Length: 223
Image 1 (tube, rainbow, N blue to C red):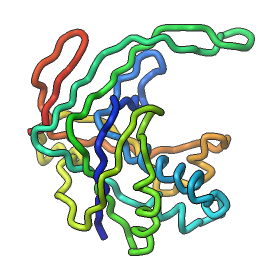
Image 2 (image 1 turned 180 degrees about the vertical axis):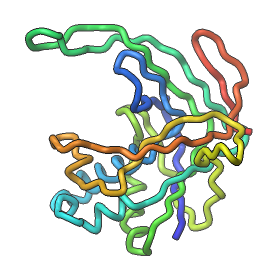
Image 3 (image 1 turned 90 degrees about the vertical axis):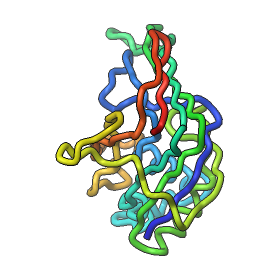
Image 4 (image 1 turned 120 degrees about the vertical axis):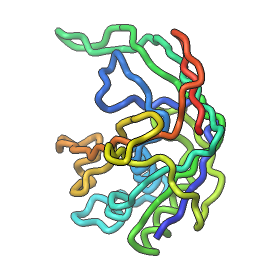
């Protein structure tokens, strides 16, 4: 069963690749499946009061979120403009306690058009559960990376951000996206838990090409 949720970016987007260091972090161009599922979990807890349900072993509500397959459709002609920035952050001191200021590299992405997030679920019940919270989400990635929910669609476009397969060849730009591991539990994705968080990783091909670039920005367009 497939449906989609359409979101319009209303601020610059930034979500560093999980393999990046804290001081040198390039940004993904789209929200990762992991970040989308965490946003749903956040809404289920904060607006739905479902923490108790999600915490239990083999929670069906958590499995609705974990087992969902996520893909994307981005419209032809959509522009992605990436600004290269150096910002001041705080990092822990090596000895003793406290923090010290340091400089870090960050990318911030302007996305000119809406994005369609496509969800493949196993049941009607899972669809209803996800749609109960998706429309409440107002940011993906870092706080302040705002998105406006537009609408749901039961007839989504065919995904054009696809898994990389070397045998099929590819045209576009490769990025590595995180997702929930197939055996993940609520405890393993809980930021306040000491349980090791194992993430599934998938290399995706984005159908975009470079238009122009300089030391301060890169401009891409969907073809």
